[in-house]
Figure 1 (cartoon, rainbow, N blue to C red):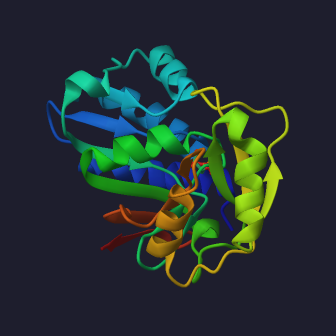
Figure 2 (figure 1 turned 180 degrees about the vertical axis):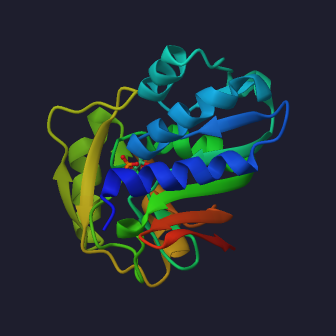
Length: 220
Ligand code: 5RP
């Protein structure tokens, strides 16, 4: 049995095959993405640069001498690569365990091709096995939490955590995930919500799922 870090490394390495000469790529955040950056460093001259979804990803890219670009000047990106907390058979995701969900969602939306890299523990039949993170403007915290309760959700304030955008996170549970697109829109409609961690309207296009028997590729 391979351990989880080895599986994360294997899925990250498999994503290298999708990179073409001269591309600008988008990158999410988290330990699987960090494994990807380590692998990317060996072919960094092939790409123009990376648009990063978090300060942590930017730091790691800098350590590896990989150029960082700005989304506002980069235009549409050819490729976005990111991990996930959960992925279902439709390649819809829950993200935001690391709190970078808003920038991740923007870059995913601005990219032609979204590759999700994950170890097999992230694969679920139905989303919602763990918490669904929601990024909230700090002054709206109590109001948004009450609205979530009215909708049947259980919100928990993420202690001692601010996002790169200066906002708080409510980790929520008890949702009906049978229609993830509807739930994503419903939560976005609460004033004070910046973004929620459901990636259903813009799911991944390709999943590279590392298992003990190798990396399995699923296309949407
Ligand atoms: C950060 C994320 C990450 O992609 C997610 O938490 C998975 O992280 P890891 O690769 O460390 O398991 O959504 O906001």
